[in-house]
Length: 467
Image (cartoon, rainbow, N blue to C red):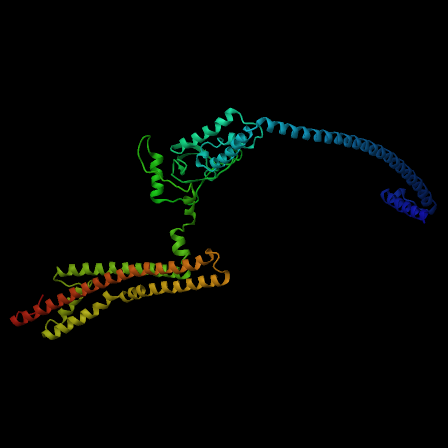
């Protein structure tokens, strides 16, 4: 079987070789094929013997490499044992030296231990102080004292109380210095103003900054100051601007945060005007706002329309020639059509003309009245809806987390507020429009009564119709 496999391999190898030769060199007889197979078999045999020799040579090399590696391992193990014995000896020696050091220190050991403890505590205090933003490396000496196992030197002991005095002095200062701000211009250096240990803000735009307590090592790569995402604004930012622009020796009010930044950061949780009125009110609050918006626009439109109508009537009162462009002119034209009639007929004609003009002035008053009445009812609906959400949250999650109930309470209170916000201006606009409409109607009735009186007077004198 082995011979057959070799012959088969030789045959396939010969076939591949024959396929690569030109057509003129092809084998055309069985004898030639057998001779070629024998030649290829001997060639393959020689190649196999050469491969076996190379493999044996490599095996000898691998054996020598393994022996060298084992020898090196034994050397390293011996060296490791020597190092371990040396380490154990040094550790014993260190323990003995520490015992001798404690014995030599005596009572001073407790003093130096107290100094290291206080240096660590004071370092933690200064790391959280806003003044460290101006002097980021001032706590490094305190850290070395707190972490050192050796006796502190006189200079290091003096640095503790000198650093304390520096902190006391800096707390009473309003200082301006340059510092990188993390989220402004990719951490670019800004000129900032510090008010003691209480607040810090940029000198240019009076934007308040947040101080992040870091060690001096981490401060090398990361700024200690970051801009607050939400500024307080109003008088607080105005006071910061005055401090930043004040000259030396001048007296100005400065914004102070006694919580060292926590109070200013709480402005992030204060909702904006949009968030409070549009978002927290829910769908009912949005509907109230839209209703109030269009109602106010409609009321203002009515006020302008009635004001123009009243101005036109006042202008017509000074003219004898009636005009169709105003209500009084149309009433006067109705009189001209009935001036030859008796007084009762003239009066009825004028009343009819006034009745035709009255709906134009009363247009929209009922709509304003309806909107003013519906707005607080929608606010009450939002209150009930919000309280239902609150009780559902209490039923599902309990009363352990107040934030889960805050959403429903917010809807309840905000919608009530929005309902009142909408109802008050709508009621004012309705009252104002009603007053103007009644004033115009009173003017028309007054002028109509005067026309009837002049008509009766002229008819009694027999002078004809009134011009």
